[in-house]
Image 1: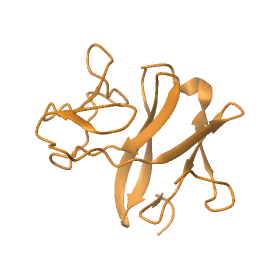
Image 2: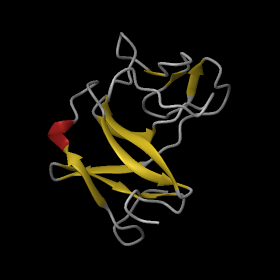
Image 3: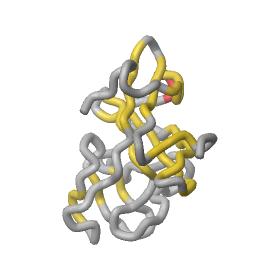
Length: 129
């Protein structure tokens, strides 16, 4: 389902300029099933994508350093703890202990120089409960 302004209120996440192609991700706090969690957005092949910062193999944060999720060749999202590898555009597991499970997607949209995210029934802003 594509996010629409009528169905889900969009929340400003960051400026479009903050997300450089295959660069550092913008990290943000969410509540996933009412539990605090981190999420991240990054630009890959011109698209902004966002996921929970949680490896599908073992639920741990994946970034190497704050906001650094891509492997050395900047081709895949890679878990710094387990080495699980994910496709940046889909979040699907490519290789590693994650099997067929992928990353949890966060709906985002870019327009007018701003990136917005759309809270879902399961993933809400950290300031809500």
